[in-house]
Image 1 (cartoon, rainbow, N blue to C red):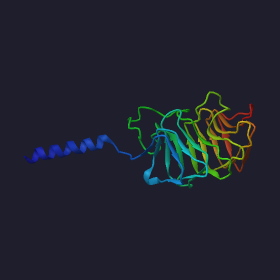
Image 2: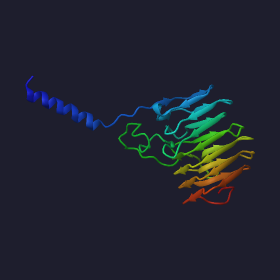
Image 3: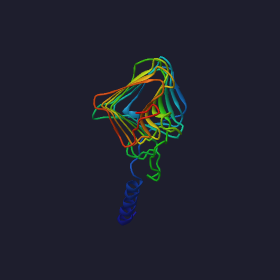
Length: 230
């Protein structure tokens, strides 16, 4: 093959590789129930919930620092009947976001950024465990909270008698309903510290439940009072 032809072919191949853009590995999860302790790792991130994921009673789901979780569909839910330990670090937050959010983990859905993230593109992280062990720390929760009533739904739902979730050093932004919703006439509760809630339908809403907000937690833009909301 002539040298000129060889160089032309090499140039064409390089051009195709550049134009294709980076490829991002992902772990896709269909409808899944964890019945043994499980850890989500950065090596297998982002985790894409194509179906709802359930953590059974007595089981712990640990999410390592830097992991990205993407919800693929408006009704997608991470439902925790056991314990959720989502503890990031200041340098490596855990991100819960929409499948269309290319700012976290790249263009996972491969649409060339044609679809932009928006509030309500997923349902919720729901904790209904009856224990006080679940926590989110250095976590960013955004583009979820699907729900018709802002005060009755949340990107994080905390429910069930005796359930307490501790939220620290986190952000809840651009969620359709509340950033955090607590209880349905139950003795559930949430402790929120050093957390920013902005551009949500409501900041925190509570129905027959309790909320403890302390240590420089901030509300912005759409947080309101009334109807059991904060």
